Amino acid sequence: MVCLGNICRSPLAHGILESKLPSDKFYVDSAGTANYHVGDSPDYRSIAVAKSNGIDISNQRARQFKVSDFDTFDYIYTMDNSNYQNVIALARNSNDIIKVKCIVDADETIQETHIPDPYYGDISDFQNVYKMLEKICCKLSKTLQNTYL
Image 1 (spheres, rainbow, N blue to C red):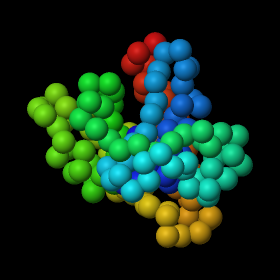
Image 2: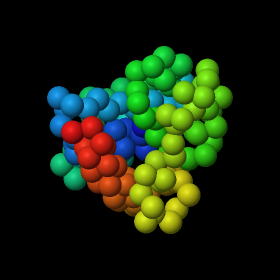
Image 3: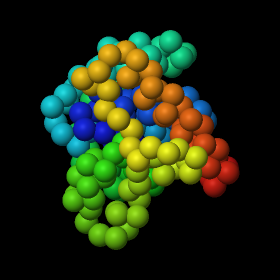
């Protein structure tokens, strides 16, 4: 799961998807394309919204996306087109590129073209992002489990 700073959207997506998959079969992580918040906890509003939905993301720490992530992960989901372009720019070959997808494309019923960045908004913006990601991750978890289990 990849967003810009790895403190708002991608930690939520990470926590939501992780909660829906068996931990002994799947490894979920998140990263940012920028290094602004490396080592920081998720935004307090992301932590609060996740917690109010029974998910604890407080132990996550922000990190920057790195080229070796192409080797570690089978799928790389970005939150918006800017994140997508930043990740694709690091790709070494076509095998890296085919792993990268915009997360909204994982659920064909989603009308939005991206997950909006709630950082400059209020708690309602974080709740909206959570609802979008919950819906997408529900579909994504079923797809992944049907494919690999």
